[in-house]
Image 1: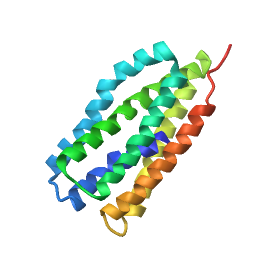
Image 2: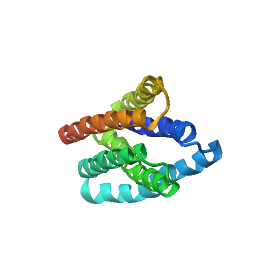
Image 3: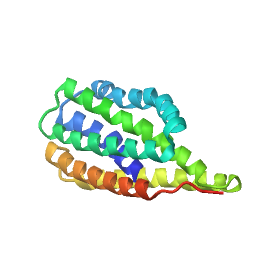
Image 4: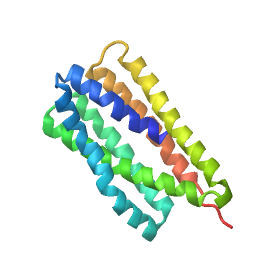
Amino acid sequence: MFNGVYYFAFFGLPQLLQEAGGYEPGVVGLLMLPLAAMSVVVTPFAVRAIDRFGVKRVLIAGVVLLVTASGMMWLLTASFAIPLVMALTALLGVPYGVVSIASSQGMYVSTRPEERGVAAGIFQTCRYLGAITATVLIGIFYGTGVNQANWGLMVFVMLGLGAVVFVVSLLWRERRD
């Protein structure tokens, strides 16, 4: 479900910026760059936080940031100003880095060593299912046109998925030997 939220922004936002915002593809790429950059920058900090506070706490904190950043994407229903877009994509990159690493680490501490290969395969399958689901839903929402109103509907779905990820994160338990 986290990857569904991720791919809504990663696939849906560039289309919105290009088609409804009128930005050239190269500019859209630059506007999306803070998302990827922040994901990379925060990852080592997230790893240190996991060592200090544990996977579950970091995961929950990352999901709270994810829901907050997803909600802030609503601002794009009103404006495509470059500073706003860059701030929002940077903000969204933070939980993407945190939740990605916390989810991966959570998978490893939740499985026995002999099961980790299977768990990694299932984990990757779920990532692909998130991407596919987001792509299908983007097609449905943008089917009537790529515009700010339809983006607003996608933000609601992002918030809903984020809420589900939050509940799952609260319920997650580390495997005890």
